[in-house]
Amino acid sequence: MAVLLNLFLDISLLRKGPQDVPASEVLLRLTLVAYLLSGWLVLWLLGGPFFSALLQALVDLGLLSGLSYVLLFLAGYPERYPQTLTALAGTGTLLGLVGLPILAWLQRVEGMREAMALPSLFYLLLLVWNVALIGHILRHALSCPPWRGVAYALGYLLITMMVMGWLFSPAMSG
Image 1 (cartoon, one colour):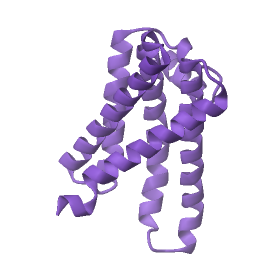
Image 2: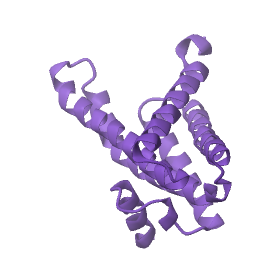
Image 3: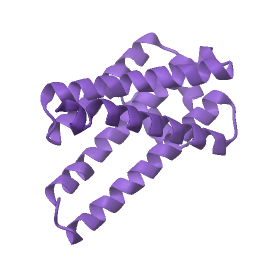
Image 4: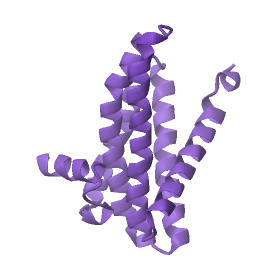
């Protein structure tokens, strides 16, 4: 288990890429479950209703899986999908767990303008790192320049935010 944690940490620090992930169905399934659970945990602990948080985490997982497959398929690299998705889910799990205390801190100081500055900065840095990390993974998976990987990462995050906002906005639930 420590070997896998080190692998995902190395990918998160941009020292390795998805090509370094073992092509394993079991590992893929484990990372997908971990990604789903960490996403649900973040949403639920931050005040989301249990089933709503679970549904949002499932939609997020579906978008991660679907959009990465479409991108790899269109680029002509569908065989890279299992390792790419494993890398995205494994590192996404790590970032979700790292972000949990930052989000909890933000929630605790909500409305206290001056107290929100530092956790907001940390959260912004985590978001920027997430874009860089997804871009890093996609650049390797798609054999493209780094700037294109980051562009794909931004596109993925924008699509995810739009879909999640559309599906789970307060106006839709009322």
